[in-house]
Length: 79
Image (cartoon, rainbow, N blue to C red; front, side, top):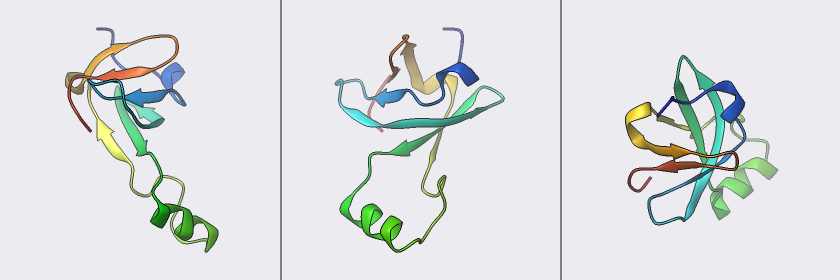
């Protein structure tokens, strides 16, 4: 495991079952921040202009990551 890098930003994030749980927004000092898949409430807030682009993101560290491929980041468990 080499850890998260800036080049991983924008990749989809999948849980251990292969379900897409979000997208890797940004990587800072090896820690990633994942924006969860949007809900209906998120869509409404976005249309109303409420909340910033990184609101609701969740930190993910190297210990949570099972593997990183060219196409996605796979978590060890669920999100």
